[in-house]
Length: 365
Image (cartoon, rainbow, N blue to C red; front, side, top):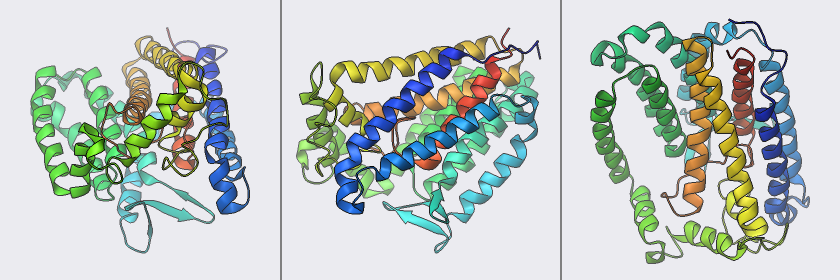
């Protein structure tokens, strides 16, 4: 490693803190009516989001000051533990069933989502593996297939829950890292065609996924069923205009739009803060992606570069999918918007991942 910089990348820190502040405000605005109706406390979700954000920021700054060699040392143990948790969560009576998916493990008053831990563990493991085998990544059988097999095994366990959104982010992040490590585009393209066929099989295997695809193409075919989420999301975004209806003035959050404080929080933000508010959030994500790519390019070694690539790709893919879903560009799938959507495991682990990025920014050339 080169000489440590005195400070991490403050542009990343500023972008993250602004996104978190917007997120806490929007979680309160989007959930206040529902949480008051259900819990007699309009701040129920906002207080928990603030708690998770505080814990995540604490982890972010702790991790940003660790010896970066620890990430490689803990990578194998981390992915083994995450595979174990992905198996445990599938056991009936152990894993918690929510929204038709067995994706959660209860711990006291809180619960964790093992697939979120797997995303971060997979990034660290692939960064170590790929940096150790970079010379052979141009080969198909001995270079490309082994890391893809690990990613595929994790994807298979996540799909058994099932959780297509998280699985898609995991696979997309893995492919981005493998390509950055030197895999041939022709090899990835050939496997991509097989992947499209496998994805089609997954869609055909579950009737609700077929409905989501058809609803994405024409939500008005089933406006009270499969197309309901997208229609209500567009009803929120449309009236927002340039300036929005005003903070707290959303109509769709009043039990019209499902999950307004989680998966569809961007819709409420666009409704209340308009194009300016939505554009500001997209700009902050773009700044974060730019600085993440910069850290990856200027990293002192391949492991650090791949680690930064993985963290940046994970955040980028998840944000693009979420915003694409709520605006009708992609089929509806359950995935949160990083830093803004309500959620414990997702928010805390994503901030921990940013801590890794900040750590690596101290060592850029």
